[in-house]
Amino acid sequence: MPAAWTAGAVELILIRHGESQGNVAATDATVSGAEVIAVPARDADVELSSTGREQVTALGRALAAVPESRQPDVVISSPYMRAYQTAEIAVETAGWPVPVRSDERLRDRELGILDMLTAFGVETRLPQEAERRRWLGKFYYRPPGGESWADVALRLRSVIGELNALGSGHRVMLVCHDAVVMLFRYILEGMSERELLDVAASTPVLNASMTRYVRPEGVGPWTLESFNVADHLMEQGVEVTEHAGDADVHPR
Image (tube, rainbow, N blue to C red; front, side, top):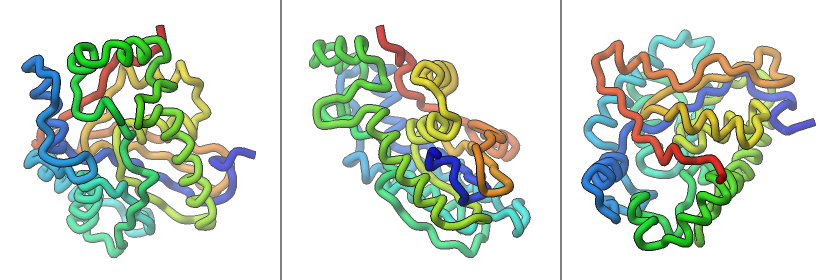
């Protein structure tokens, strides 16, 4: 039986981090036609932007309205600064008495040789890699020194196995990254490569959005209750941002 189907947690909430300084720098670089993204720090240390902080504070206010009986008793974040800040600010604002733990398996995909390059920069500086990525598609393409989406899925499967070992009845919130949210969908819903890439190409995961799975009995398959919800931002007058990756994801 797949690990995702064994007895364990009854609710899983996936949060994408708020807008980061890296998101802003990447968008600015793409719009200006630059080859290199002027990121302010290494990927693991990039912090939230001012808009990102507003987003995750609004997220925390929305979470504060969750009845005590349905509040997560486990909160785990990617160790990357933008995600961990999101988790800490949201939990503190919500007033939840739960510590934030970190797990490196929830980190963003490692880009290796492509790190800090725009799509234009990859085409210009590494044309063979650009062609190899087009041929393999986003799911299986692994840049030198980096990871494919399939690699990320492998580490996430072990996370699911450990969440199941918590025992039935737990509600869990994971704070992570857009590709990680997509790959949890791939695993929990048993998607094919094409089904996953179709969703990835058409639906960017919004900053500070919520995706929710439920399994009331703690056994069997998960049910997707909601995906990529950012109503809490719009309702509080906070800017909604997507900062999506390349939509050209299918193999050719």
